[in-house]
Image (cartoon, rainbow, N blue to C red; front, side):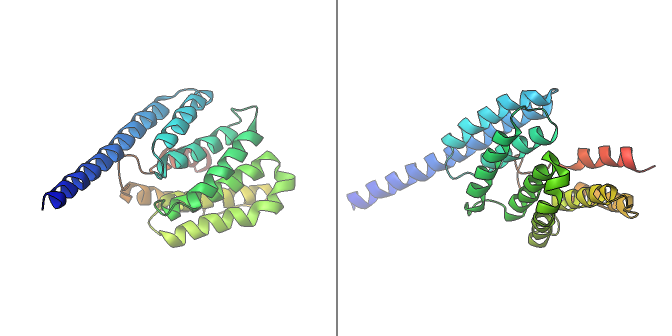
Length: 214
């Protein structure tokens, strides 16, 4: 009986400690994301990526630190705020592989990042990489949409990509602005799973619409 009681105490302490660690990881991630949102200089994201790497090591099995490392790496590449895009793309590819193997990860968000990764690859050399990776971009976004039709991020990124490809081919995506208008409501209706779950995209939508729809 004493042994059973001791085991119960031990298990209770383990569960309590695990819950506390999970809460601490989320709190630390929230602090980093708050700093990312307040960052005025894209190059300043490097420091936050390094912080996320440390957090990833402290929170094994948690998918969101790796998710945001990948996302910020790709933002740095696409904004041309780095002189080493190949290194960041390599890191993003490695983190994507980890995310795809993490059962905890939101598959729709991971597929969105995968499409975004191939979009960043195309941006390095559109004339060469456009034909090479076009299908991977579309496939990533379309799979993300199938996995979660309420997720606005892959819908937005697919619309933006298709509009850019139309412009590259000297064509016009006549329904682009209507898509953005519909997607704005989708973003406003979307409820992230937690305070640190992916929720980005609305500000990009508003910026793109302001500069493309009159």
